[in-house]
Length: 226
Ligand code: DC
Image 1 (tube, rainbow, N blue to C red):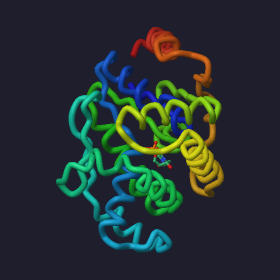
Image 2 (cartoon, helix red, strand yellow):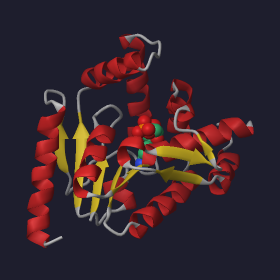
Image 3 (cartoon, rainbow, N blue to C red):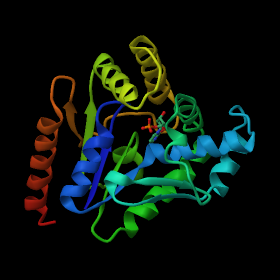
Image 4 (cartoon, helix red, strand yellow):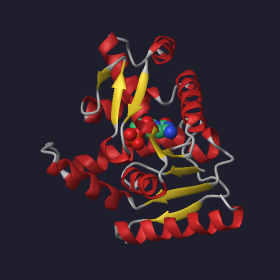
């Protein structure tokens, strides 16, 4: 079973993706973490983010691995654990830039398809283009969204608990900037697949969204005997 979860940053994709992977015993793939790892590799390499050919080469030669259970997933770049290093604001912005490069996307999509197909029980993938590009035939597709203010509030609260310094206004500006880039890039912009189940999480708490998603998955499983 392949479950695709797409949507903008801060809509709850990671938390819900992990919860679903745990409930159904599936592999969990955070595809944003892969673009973040490419961004980190490019910066470590001293490559300019304005040099698509160089960044594409960095993406091709980087060994990116995701290991562990959904709740304790670790991200490795060329054998080093970079799970914390990829969660900075600088890397978030750089990931949003490198993810506009078609060759980088091609390399990442190949890796994501391979990992998803290799997983015996199936996989939950979350990102921006899973239902539209990576797995257009996914068994079920979700598009999670929320108002920018709600997403910024969640991200800001999360950052605070992790001791990161920013203001709500900075977080909102940063979310708006990344959204604009994600929806306007020419290759695989963030769009809603025709057959996606769209859930606006602005006014819902986590358990309500989770219950809706589980309900839809169970409907599909019963219909398709998955
Ligand atoms: O979900 P995230 O914030 O970790 O993603 C980091 C960046 O990568 C974000 O700007 C969007 C991009 N991305 C993408 O283009 N396609 C994906 N499948 C996942 C993330």
